[in-house]
Image 1 (tube, rainbow, N blue to C red):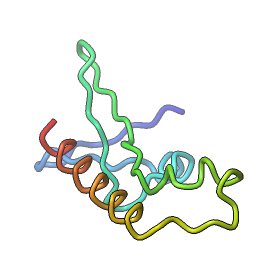
Image 2: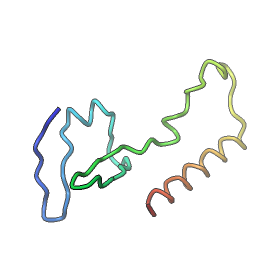
Image 3: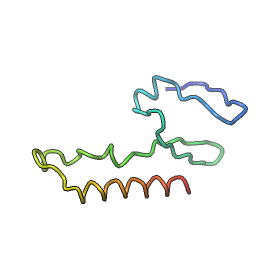
Length: 86
């Protein structure tokens, strides 16, 4: 897919809607910007909550403890904090 976008006076660009849908990029999602020579690469950062369920078959019918849920929330906050600093 090749698209042309325009940079606004604030340095913003709009990701084409078809590409956002295909990559499941939603409002508020964090994106990593990587410079590779004279090119820019934009990579969606996965939220830890989106990784939930990758082991669904193993834990089907079981509910995580409150301690595990609290740890998950803490890790998500820490991950988001670190990605803001990068």
